[in-house]
Image (cartoon, rainbow, N blue to C red):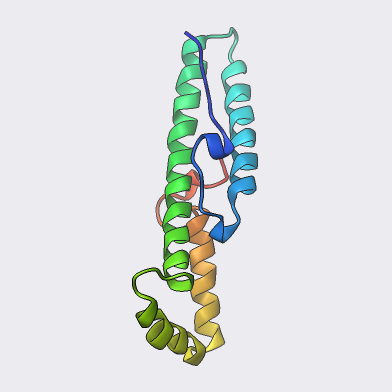
Length: 129
């Protein structure tokens, strides 16, 4: 049957706090291209092989999006608090000012790796598809 694959905001909208929407759309386009290339490398075209390849791609993209959405939520809650503005104003932000740059940098680096899906056992779920 027909196959329909979504990329960019049609797949899932992302809060712009980490400015990753365009990046995600480009990654999705590249991953679809790789999936189609892998499916067509077989001796003969098979819709079942293409469908299986695209389903696996979708699973990998979901994991990548989950990492990005979790990171976005953390950054948004720290930078743009809604109900906890008092906690952020009088606790989180002053604490961040007192925190040594080395610690802030390591936390930032971890968050970036996490948002890209490069931490833990899900390394394959990132941009390498």
